[in-house]
Image 1: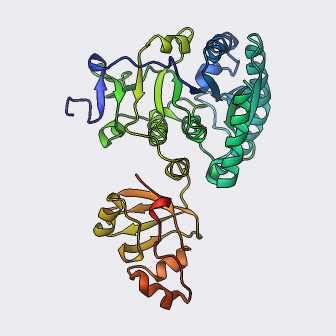
Image 2: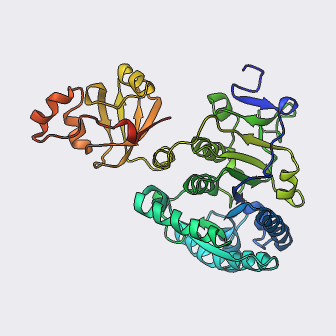
Image 3: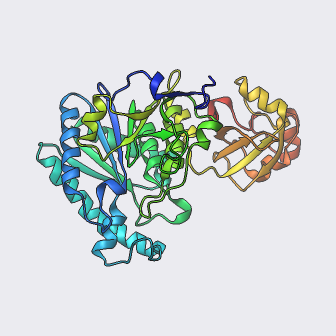
Length: 389
């Protein structure tokens, strides 16, 4: 498609009707700007309206999960920490203290709002390690599934009180998509302060065109994203596009819409303006969804053109096609596979440590035992442990 809005995109005039109506399992991500005002006060009326929408959808048979930002924005006000465009950003330890304080207030607000509709709430705090480590991932998924079965709405946030800069999601857009992937949700909605993706920033370009549907995340789609201007929000359209990529790989459709409208979920159910990212084909298996959505790969394997072509055809990665190893990792760690031009072609779980992988680079599988002194797997990354990017 070449209509001026980028391959894989459909503008508003050509879009079909998509709605959250009938979703079986829905993840709702709410940005800080919607939950707290500029002074860090909770927007209780807005929370009550969202709770009414969520309870109505739950009664109609949709399982609901809420990924709620706002803890730091609320906590910094309670602690008297300076904020605003002319004040310094919080240090990491201050952000963690604000998160710990604000999370209590935030959880209480959700509990009170949903209790009015006889809906129970559970608080779940996740770190990136809870989704990158396979055992912790499965434990978190099991807990969430049990809560949903019992009719409870999980309210999820990043555990900012223990996460360092190196191990943080860094935004709740990607966290929401990761949760959607974890629980096999069919729909994810990101409520923001804009009604979707535009060809350019509509605040600065009057000719910007709204994109109603996206069926593939191409370089043109990525180029439409911009940086965040919100001090407490850390996402912006860039991370929403990254979240959409995770969701699409999991077979989950994702919508970005304006949460400032009255009863936003009810409006979306009626077809309010937003951007829908629509997956193509069947969802991947649970294991491959987990690999594809890995946010913190340990290292990189650079391969030649022949290996990249073989991977695209569904083959495993063999030592003979490897050019070099970048980074330090152990057997079983998630790695990125790039071609000789630097383009990411796949992600997978490596069968060798970085030191051993480097020693057998370019060798035939039959030659590796003589070099390593032991008989390892023939494949560097088996196709069952590999997902194309």
